[in-house]
Amino acid sequence: IILIGTLGVLLGLIFILVFLYHRIRFLTKKLSKKLAARKAASVPGPFASIRNLLLIFLWVAVFGMIFFIGFFFQAYHAFTLEVPVAKVTIIPQPQSETTKIELVQYGKKEDEEKRQEVELTGEQWMLEGDILKWKNWINFVGWHTRYRLTRLRSRYIRTEDEKTKPSSIYQLAEKENHPFWGYLYKHGHKLPFVSTVYGNAVFQSTKEEAEYLVFVSTSGFIVRKQEGDNKNIN
Image (cartoon, rainbow, N blue to C red; front, side):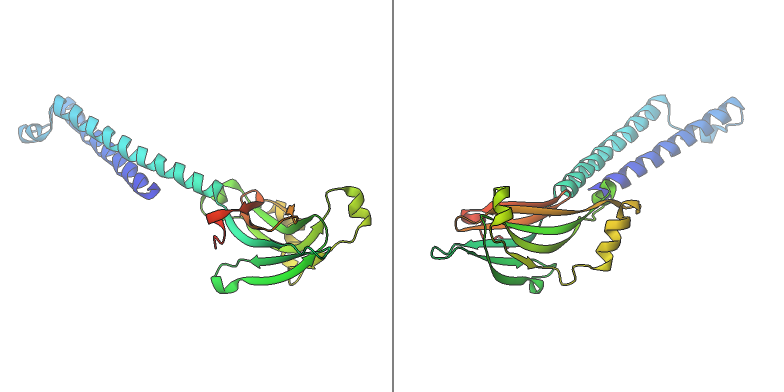
């Protein structure tokens, strides 16, 4: 839509330039009294010229509207896009102090999914990762937020419980001190296309059987509980 609108507006501007060129050329020749009778007859009169100019403006207006509609939808899509990155399934174990967690990490392709089952203590599960946020204009042209999941861990609601009760933590990144992310954390803010690089986490309850989807948006990770027909979205 943006491409069609842009081409239409450019053609309209070309039509306006051609129109102005012919009118200026006609007036110049008329003022210099060098316009031949045959050429004068071929030049449109005032009313025809006004009609042609209005048609050109209408052309530009229509394709300009198409361009801005496409621009709006592209911006809306770029800044509201949420890509699923993981699914967390809670499987309570009544006779145990731990909760079974089934984690599915989504890849770009279906065969790149990683599945694992772990057991967590605590009242909540927490998924941590790294976020590379592009500058807004980079998002607009189609580059989405880069991310890396690093850890799955337990969490307690009360700070005192965090200090005294047992916790669980599992490594998700194959190489936690990856030089690429190390460089981004140190120098990413200096790069021309990068807005910021930071750590991000989402957490939810482990008290009842449930399924959660974790998404990455332009601002970081988002977690949503899946219910009814929304389950098994991927």
